[in-house]
Image 1 (cartoon, helix red, strand yellow):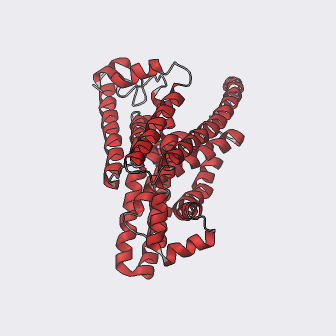
Image 2 (tube, one colour):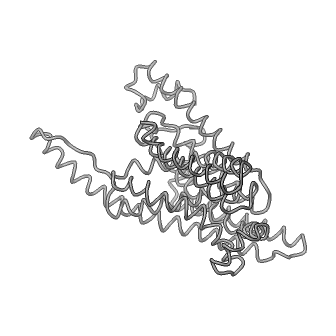
Image 3 (cartoon, one colour):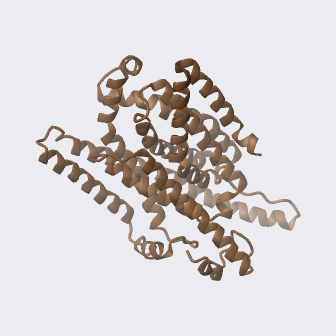
Length: 383
């Protein structure tokens, strides 16, 4: 099972490291290995969130996510995206931008760094909306109940998550404007760039999320009809089958997954420049990391890990919230990538540990299993 799920990742790792040695010797080998670890540590929460969405999709769309989705993630976000950033910010053609990445890596890094505020604002807003929509929703299973219960009550107010996100964006842009004014201008247009990019991230979330939600509602109607058919099938002795996302619903969910992956990859791509300016080594290292994130997503789905460890999804969403705040802070201040990676890992490890405690409490209380919602066991888990 493990080899089947991670086989392609192992193969890409071997090929990528060999290619690095041929390209730049053992030093390049070390850089690619470090970049791979960086991408995996920064994107573990991505895998958990992806798994929560992917398990709703049928086998065909899961396969599309692992084939076409990998091409978009590895080649699109980790190779093409940095080049596109440079091309737009420096007003160059794509070929000129690629030439710059090979022949003048220092200038290339400078241009990507200049584009960071708009990238961070877009990604920060998109990720923040994911976190806010999660935390304001009333859930049967709650992890940090002292936070989640009052926020779920507040979440009954329509459009609250959008209002909170816009307030945060205004504060971020005003902070940038104040800083620019205090330091004699120079980057006076930076605040408007942050504001526009943040609004673009918010709109992207609302459009893609709205479309996928619309088709999910359509699917629920189909599910109701299917349930009626299943009841008839049971009466006649035929096996019933689960209804998974397909067609337009799965297509928009796939788009949502790709935009989500893009938002997660921003910090990895930007963080990679702290390690190397070489576009080839960057693509190899981040590409290897992206493959493991994909494999880990499938592993979580096939093993039913999210059903067994019910707080993992909560931990991942808190990690997303932390990452969105970090991205917005990095518009003005520098934050070490190690801190970014550790925040996500710590939150997910805490959620996993809480899930294990919950499962033990359920077993001790005589619950039906890890997925049981026995209220006494919930309280005894002490979370």
